[in-house]
Image (cartoon, rainbow, N blue to C red; front, side, top):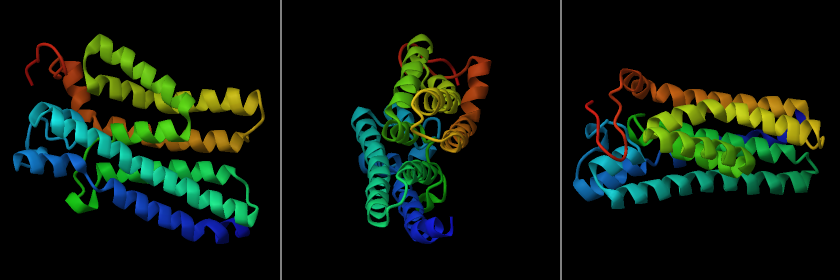
Length: 234
């Protein structure tokens, strides 16, 4: 255990810092200022995210925001993967550490996106970055969660509703898929691994839901805006 700590302490610390700083580059704020000279946090819903950019600024800024938010999380997670893969091979360490590092990088990038140090800790709600983390860390979980999001969005036409339900389902899908497919049937991971990644996704999903608390109130009151079709009063 001491050997693991000595080998990975500094690389993990570097991954945490770099991922958080990358996440703190909030592209919704950047592109809104480029296209409209305004602060997205003072427009529309006040959220520094893709949906508000689409409503308040336009499609071009929203598409650029969406793509760049994905890219920053991809860079964070893949950087962690390659760094830890190199160390594991060189030090003959267990490869499950790579997966932990990928989840950690995605988590820190998402935290940076929500609480960016460069923008007074007022950022977005982390839906795109968390979804990107899910896709890179375990594509099976991602497909399950994104499938649920699509169904909920198709029915309700509310991004917020789909995001909240999907965030709640994220740790559930993580547990059942890793437990039954990887631990119970194949024995490729330990029960400890299943519990740790489930805990990480539960915390991440919980924070996303917490960031949507205003949306949840509006959904319950029937005043939440729909992305397409007639908009309801806010």
